[in-house]
Image (cartoon, helix red, strand yellow):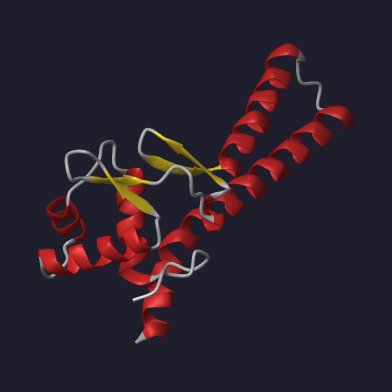
Length: 153
């Protein structure tokens, strides 16, 4: 079997990769099997082997698996890994906008003039846009694996 295309992971292999990526420590095949509720450990091993062939993951000294840090997937470049969770960059940008907005509200008393209404409108629309796009980006991780699995069958 040849290497998996580096630009394309899909279906269960994508789910296995995401699980290994977000795990706090290296995981074994049985961990993958139990966590993803696969039908057998050999199926988990099959997907782990696909990831090993593509060099997406590497084996530790103890026979467990962890993500190969030298390889970064294009689909995950807009995410930050924080305490085992993938967080879209847009959430960080939304938090900055929210912080600036709250600072404005604390520093300047509201007079409800044109300036205040403009700041409120711009900050609210920006925050909603960032969070909406971050939600869509996060959902696309799961949707990608589901749609690719359907198209492969």
